Length: 415
Image 1 (tube, helix red, strand yellow):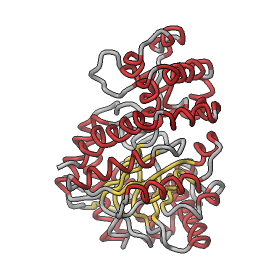
Image 2 (cartoon, one colour; image 1 turned 60 degrees about the vertical axis):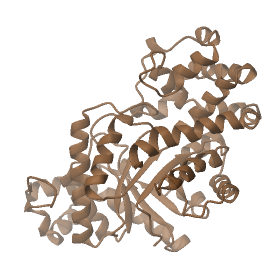
Image 3 (cartoon, rainbow, N blue to C red; image 1 turned 180 degrees about the vertical axis):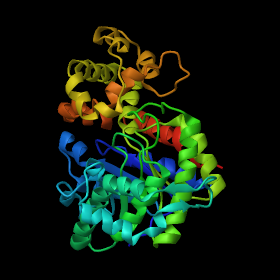
Image 4 (tube, rainbow, N blue to C red; image 1 turned 30 degrees about the horizontal axis):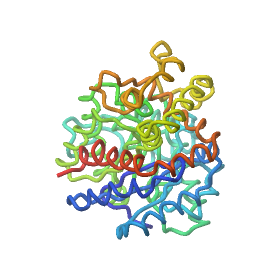
């Protein structure tokens, strides 16, 4: 098993042009005494939309590491894969996010549920977990309900893991993702999930549960921050308990699939990490593509015109672009500027509407969310878009690096 380090941070690079700019943020953080390992991630859906291959993401990461002399670990994540999509990722990737959310709620066989409950009498009754004020009281009926909801998903995770293991050997990191589902998992449910994953002999090192609140793409968290903080701390306690009780890897940690830019929960996460000494994986991907657009808009001239064209086309194809992300975006059409309005904007107006600074009166989260899911438009432009990235590499790189460093890494991990 490849061991994961304490702090890892997922970075997306839709068009494979910003790996060096991203890595620069980690280099600066390291000089400031903050050791975080980058994990480049790109899902099968994103590869399919853009027409890229995981090997290209690996090549971009390797080139950035060589260019900047990065001498620490780095990883490539097969993001949100399942048995039907994993094979193209096996060779280039060393981090696999097993997405079993679609199997949650589908009942396991009654015999498997009963066998699980019989094997785990410690999950029944009053369960004291260090770090959680009140014990869990789980009846056999409640445990059966939870097992019936999640056991099939853990069995699917086991099947995906064994498929990768057979093809690749054990030198990879395993994450299990359960965040893209309808309802958050309670700490008691997480405990049962971890016990079931142990039964499947999955050496899980990060787990991404669904938390309370909205984790929409590209914008801040919407929800009760105090409730999130309680859930996060309780989940940390459950993980520490499960590591000891079920022999799970000592490196097991929480993963927050943030949808990018959940700034308002960063202080709560930071407090929890400082209190507990726990590790963390954060996956924040799509922001990078928006920083490319911001850089193009700042460059002005033809680059600004291209950014405006991308918005106009995204507006035309809004329904199709939003459909795959319907559960993780909230766009109010009445608050989207018209293409004509945007076409009249200066560089500053476009940048202020898009850059994620909520205190800026020109910031528009609806505009930002549409562009977040609009990367397909840029992909369809082909070399027109990628040539613009090359032409304006310097100004784009500055935005990419500063966004990662100042808005994410320092607030979460800085001294």
